[in-house]
Length: 215
Image 1 (cartoon, rainbow, N blue to C red):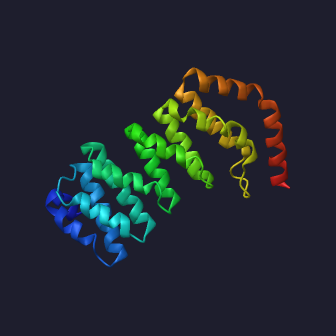
Image 2 (cartoon, rainbow, N blue to C red):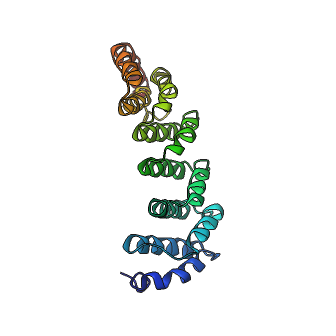
Image 3 (cartoon, rainbow, N blue to C red):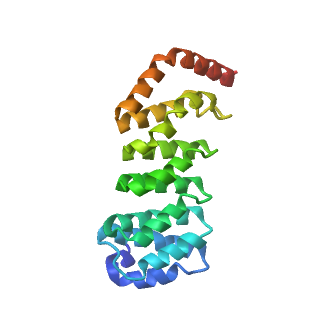
């Protein structure tokens, strides 16, 4: 444990000031130490949210930005500050897909139903990883409002695949099926049952694509 971590809350003002540094490494370390203090005893300094918000919106290093978003998410989980929630919603449109995915996962974990509509909108993303993260988050939220937006993916998922072969067409449909099963009301369960009954044809297409990718 570092001297700064041992100092705990007493070190927070200094670390918040370091978030403004022009040195990428200094900002990175400051966020890391703030995360450690948050985990150990919580961050209660009144300037914490404003400092993290400024950093998130101006940070050029995606890794540091991701850590700051994670820290802000942890703080929101404790204090449920509406300003923090608004910032997290903004981060769903961040240019870095890993940040968007982490925010989706965190908001789903917190169970705030207000994130359902923004997640539904992300189902239309052209980035497969974002679409998958949105499906998983909606499944965890178990909100039936997502049902009519997820059901079509059971079919369209069979037509989506990546060039490198890591994501095969049926994977997206399976993620959609898992989300619908988690929602658990009659309509999504019936859709999954129908999809499973038609699976042989879809699986045949998937096997053909796998073979083509291996050639």
